Image (cartoon, rainbow, N blue to C red):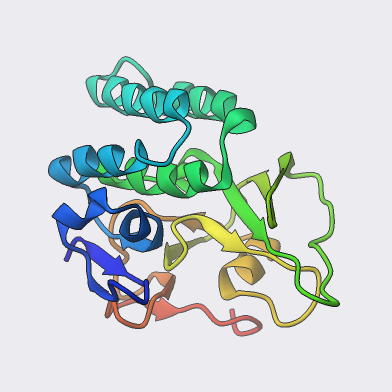
Length: 212
């Protein structure tokens, strides 16, 4: 399965041709690399994205495939785009990276923490790992260094992890705060820890806050 779409209009398995539909692209959980999916996702992204960001990410993925850019170089290039990107650009970028290279920024060493304010809610606390704080429309994105502990596979958020300063944390945010490394590359084994969308049917150990 290429992935799953978690959108009220397109809820179901991800079909490659639907990646050109912005709503599908932005709500898809991509599980594997796909050349056709990569091209279609870039086409879909260009319909709403910041064009210089879209074009640059496309070029960087191609260069990484050819070995012109190593992972460190790719991360540096992507980070240079962050200040001019919208929140939708960042959502789309993670999916394009997964389709093109089977990775997200999590696998390059950087996580995206997403805070959407609600009435009476508090933002996540500031900590040393934050590289950028981007206030975008109704949300704030924190670009932060990934942790170095045991891996937890993200099969739910595409490395854009819901974060908050109060209430029960999202399992991936809890894992991150406790030093686990969030990863998306490859497929988890039955022994690997993961947080997965219920419809994916992943065969891995479910990470639960306070258990591991």
